[in-house]
Image (cartoon, rainbow, N blue to C red; front, top):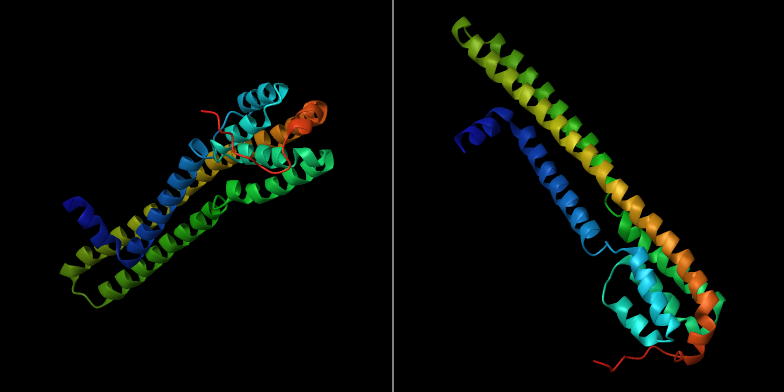
Length: 223
């Protein structure tokens, strides 16, 4: 802890500012990682196969209940289509498209902010470097020879700490953006493929299911 306190003391005010941005970056990356590994994660192929089996048995209510068991984007799109099953293919396609439009921003949110945070942290680090050097040369100009070496060393330390810290945060932002963008693209790709396949499934075998589907959503009372 004494080393950490020494770093903050040598880093100056802009080092503390960048510490705040580091906390924001870590929080953002952790939140998005939890989303993609938890609520946003669902095996679309396996989920589609489960729905196929339920619809083949004309069990629309249980298919809706399966969708309600998770808040993943894939399940929400499927639920929207099932709720409009009795209204025909056009209504099903429209409902699924509208739900996808509402869901995609949730998948993509805050990932793009990492690029902005990378630029901001770099510039804050550079600003800390410049102000550290300005203060250093201003101080050694009025100092006696015995103090000049000490002040020069302290000023250069502040400048280098700010530069290294800003670049480290920017590097973390870029790596986080790379990984989260890959996860986002996979979710979007799976969602689009699932939507198309599920729409075709309802078009091919939805007629029989629609004949038994209620006009409004109902609760399945089976245990």
